[in-house]
Length: 320
Image (cartoon, rainbow, N blue to C red):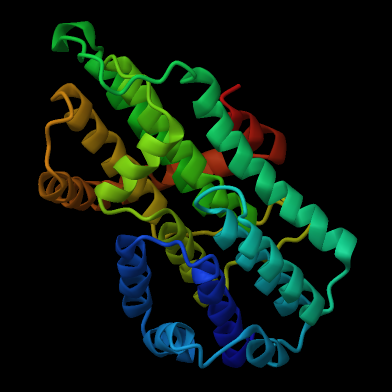
């Protein structure tokens, strides 16, 4: 893909991230951090793109003409859809934006609608799995005593979740990356429940954000690194429509999932008394620990990736 096409796709993804105007300041800060961390990659200056989007110097109308191939246009739409769905189902402004984008890209309405529906299904399934099991959500209950919690079992659950999400990161399809966030939400829910808390999806999203992990920004970082590395969107056909696998991975999702899981254990085991600063500090230390582990578990991630298909991923997100 030409650098100009990559730049246009990332510009449209950034527009999608802010189209509903309802992003918390900490999420905006995370998107800015990611733009700076991916600076100058593949001839694309993301910090400049970020400023252009915020200042409205770039728009759908100005970005689309740079997408000359059918593949780049399809990938731009897919990434924009996933960005809009990363923090939940699409809002009315996001739906309007995606309709405008599809029209200007000249994509088939039925095919584009099918992809958008798959992304919505993942977003709904993730929230629904938590909402159903946590229907009697009560975040104010007293925690279970430490002796009543099986710490070894939780450690195994966290490691397995990190490996699964690392495997999803190895897949080239745009929707495979989107499945990571609902699975992280389910992990936090299970950890809270093990410590006596029934959590709803709103509390879980807030916990993840407070730890310093944005939902929209996390998707942008994972998908952006794949795109800049030429590893995103190589296999078409919708959710996990092919079997092409990356040989290596940046390990972002393994690190993030592992750190989130163990921070959640500390938070709920301690009766939710950690301050925001303490949560972020604990997350950063655990993320550093996880970065040192990811190479050891890469073979397990690669093996898991070979077994994944659309049905299995949706079943995991739904909790079945």
